[in-house]
Amino acid sequence: MTDFRMKKTDDVITKSFVDLVIENGFDNVTVKDIALRSMISRKTFYLHYEDKFALTDAILQDILTWLDETLKKKRALIDQGIVLSRAISKLEPELRQLLLCWNRPIHAIMTIPQAKMQLMDGLKDILGQHLQAAFKHSESDLELNVIGGMMLGMIRYYLQTNEFPSSNELYQLSDTLNLIFKA
Image (cartoon, rainbow, N blue to C red; front, side, top):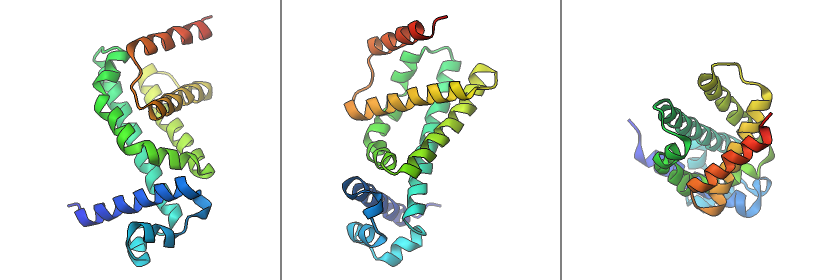
């Protein structure tokens, strides 16, 4: 059973940490700063996290878990024969969650070089699992890096514009990719 007070405190700590990282940079954020912003004691912080690095890892894992779950839902829709543009509209709740819940944490993680690399590596691993299931062949590093870069680009686009790509934009992107990679 989830202790809702613990969850609420985790949420406050995470929000305070993300805000501080965006405002001051990771290196300039201390546990004392996080505790002050969260209106908790340092002792309470340490009941939840070992240090700011453990907090960063927890946020990073939450992002990767969310991405993995969203990709599983997308894969299930595509397995049902739903085209990508329609699958994206069916995933609107998850995309709204990206915008509302994950925008600032992803932005903060992307400013921390080590965490950014962990995010990219985690994304690469998750994509590898999903690509292998989708294409029934071993994925190459080229596929993982190109598709991972495109996926991160889509996430960045969505976070910057606060809008879903239109069907026309998705078709245009598909046509452009076909032109670029056509043999």
